[in-house]
Image (tube, rainbow, N blue to C red; front, side, top):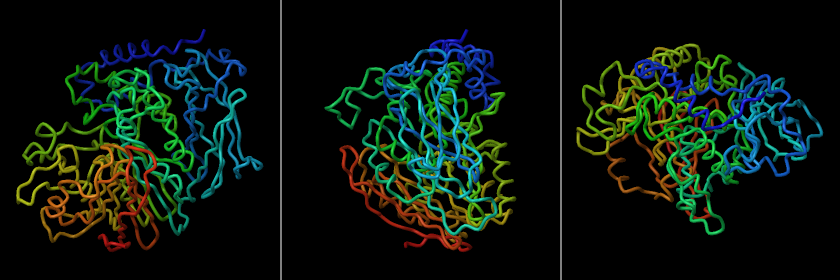
Length: 545
């Protein structure tokens, strides 16, 4: 008999598993929540005969669109989630068993030259999500894909494989996006992003937000629909997180951006809770309650992203990972939430202290740090690119010699940042590019070898992408624009409107085009290029294009 995928039952399993971990093990084992999330309520192999009859799908199950991600030279992950009723727990599908889903990938948009096809089962236990590893593909080639379930066919998605490792590549064009609070406005930036000529998109965190959303969709101010009450409270359970992803993924502009390009994704804090640190919540919760919440959030994240399956034993959820783009670029996607030390000095903007300067503190954890530095040593790429979450460069908020710094960003972990910069220097990394989100504004920054010395060498650049929607319309020059630009001479650009960043890498230079949207609290915002900056290979330092 198939097990029933009852979310309340799964949440109870998470709480019981978390309690068995114990407080000390939870606080010291960074992968505890992932282990809990992926070893409870898994699909039962004996449920093979419990498939939903094809004719039973009487409503369109592809309401959440399609996506692809983590492309390789010969493979890409294809994703969809069956949800005929996306605002209902369980998607409007039976709470047990599975639905058979056909998939197809082709050389052309009309699927006259099919390359691969197959059938997978969308299990109720994984909320009827599908993650297909479409392999046997050719490198550096565009493909189209789609799914079928019953008599229904999904929208068509477009994806692309990466060039063969070691191959000479002239150019790669990337999108940088982050921070898309649904209740703060429309995803207009994604409508414009979908029209760009890009090879891939990097989403560096805050795909969803945990806060409650009212019936009018917050600042969207709906008058043509009423959102259900299930969205009106903060997410805490597996069902809550699954429903929140469903709400976001019904947005047509987000669907268009997913269907247009393969995505590389990593999380920040709001996929779980604001400013959590490893096993430490922002708000007062017991360790057992928080590990259960984090495990539910991690599971829902994997279910709803175009990610490969976690390791079969389910003992970890390694979100940090490495990709090569021929000889042109190496991408090291970081996870700065799951393994970090707690924020020093009570979090927020504080003066540096011996606590924040403690060399034992880490933002990425010892294992991820070793992996990153080893990747620097082995890299033969022209560009070493770090897509990650929080601002890497120094940000003073006053022109005084002594300034408060953000304890949540790399400024709150200076020893950790120093180890990364020293490791890059030892490895001979000449072209370091950091891609960042989190702060809902756009920055272009020179990365200095020593931020305490204004004359120090520039050893890389950082492009901080503004938010898609978080914090509403924003302003071209936020209230602290003059102070921040005066206090940080390595800050070359600062803009507070919503939008995204288009990043182009060639053998000779890296370029960032900062796209801004006129408004997002009402539909119809227009896009413009606020500024463009370049850095030359072998000569790090930003110049306005």
